[in-house]
Amino acid sequence: MRSRWRAIPRPVRILFGVAVAVFFYLLPNLAIPLIPTPDTNFASVLFTVAVYVLVGVGLNVVIGLAGLLDLGYIGFFAVGAYSVAIFGSPASPLATKYPWLMLIPIAIALSMVSGVILGGPTLRLRGDYLAIVTLGFGEIVRLIAVNWSITKGQIGIPSVPAPPGHWGNGDPIFGIIDTRPFYWLALTVVLICMFGVKLLESSRVGRSWLAIREDEDAAELMGVPAFKFKLWAFAIGAGLGGLSGALFASRQGFINSNSFDVLTSMLFVAAVVLGGSGNLAGVTLGAVLISYLPERFRGFADKRFLVFGLALIVIMIFRPQGLIPSRRRAVELEDRKREAAEEATANV
Image (cartoon, rainbow, N blue to C red):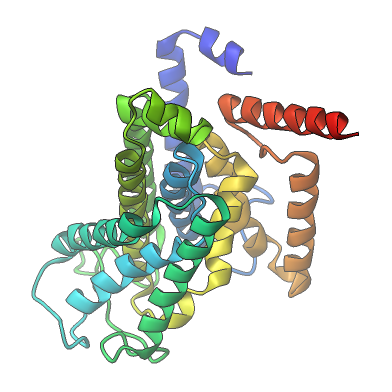
């Protein structure tokens, strides 16, 4: 499929990409059978899907490109959401008069700083140890949200500001009833961030991440400053996570500590692993499946999560590289499988 796609002339590929983007922009207004969610507002579901895709793009930088297992990504998501709420809501004791467009860069900056603070002392760890530390970071952020008087725990912060703008009749563009403008905004942000990450992947920074993911010791021997580039991956991933959290809080208009639990963080990781770590198309598909399917089959009530969990287990057993894996990542997994088989044979 990749070879056939690359054989298509570049202008045709660009036109196809534009057509796909236009389709997704028009999706809330299209009456396509079986796709809309009968029990939930379809535009709201599409916004949630876009937020999950943005989370997947950021987490893919950390897991898919740099090879760092981050189980506490919900912490960066929460930092971005609370940044907009704390500095923008009139109900917050730290409220400012900054407009929403100023609050978003603040949320991204604070999320990146939190990524550097977490990564500085911990990125010398590897594998399971790093995963445990990041999981602890996510829980620390959640506990701060529960116990800090400014975040107000489960009571939460209301009146989180939304993007500016009004229709001709004076109604706000980004209101509570019509979620389509929020979806269009989130989709635009997703496309911009995807383009930026793709450029990073093909740059010197991206090649350094891939080298570190494949073999960190060999990368350092070849002159790649592994710690520096891993810290960059953590900071950029955290910034994208904070941006997604800021969009989430702006749409909700209210946030509390219940929105940032460990289960949500595991779903973020599952989206990357399920879709295909290291591949933007795969990560996008994984995020769509994780966020859309439970809402589409809400009629199954509680059983939908059981069916969804079983489907994840089946996919991980029979296709551990993900639904649309990175070609390089798939080769890595095959090499590791072959090495494990040779080692087992030698032991016998």
